[in-house]
Length: 430
Ligand SMILES: [Fe+2]
Ligand SMILES: [Fe+2]
Ligand SMILES: [Fe+2]
Image (cartoon, rainbow, N blue to C red; front, top):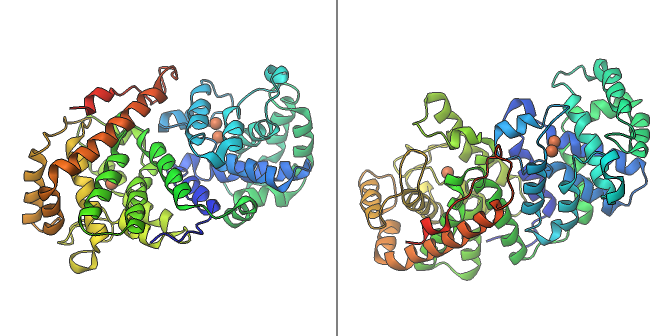
């Protein structure tokens, strides 16, 4: 059961916490940018609501940079090719009604002040632009104060060119204070939560679903091979739960858990997810971290206890050979067992870099074999077999729809180097 008062601030910070796990070079980038932008917004006298939107934009600003290569590229001070990730971020965030202003800020967060004077960009974009460039100049080393003079010089050299002069001015005042820098590098989670929760209002069940669907796109669009995976798992898990007697509220919980089950994959580099050859030991280790992160991130969200359990245990196996907790036997709830079956079933039908998807009914043989070796629940696989055509049609329809959305999303987007590539909806239609 989903607690209806799930705070949006928890959800926003959950995404930010995961995307920053992808590489140590970018650890903490989003939270630092959000902190710096927030302090600048306050010094400029913006309202608490405007400030909350800017903090929200700060913690989400680079979600459009889907591959690690692209993310590391934009961490250079003189970054080039920044357009794609701004547009992708804007379009992803626009899918959720409450992110309308946040999406606009993200859309222009690398716009140079001098090049955009005639365009009336949101002030938040100018603030984020400067905060972002300050953050990329901050070393991961603890002795930040030794770096401050160099950072100040680089930023003041950009006043009136890359940066809005009024924003540079308040930044220079803030930069005088040692506490500003030391706060920026210590974990400002609680600080950020307090700033964002000003605009928290309880999300309705439908909004929660809308938000989870947005997150599933951020996860799935990392690779065209996984572009419709979460929605396939979500719809087949919901259908399996329906045939297992779950009530309406639990069905929605299952759907949300399905959308979020791979949120920990945001911490796995796209280069590993897309690798055409089989993974070596280290790469497989990186991949195996994802369910742990799903658990860690979702369990921080107030009211998400059931979602966390159903989502994060999808690679556990009844015989205890799964990961990451090696939970087996009767400690796996029916919801978690359903998610495990939905995940394997959906994955088998999809093309992957190293194999093409399996014929529909062939998947049942693989699932039955997994039941025989006590990996998956026999009753759940039995339910799938008994209602195969119906459940499979639900999965397919959802994935065809999502593939169409993905194609739409990719169209006209693209500099060649972005990780987003078209996916033919027709490959899901037979
Ligand atoms: Fe960026
Ligand atoms: Fe950034
Ligand atoms: Fe997974």
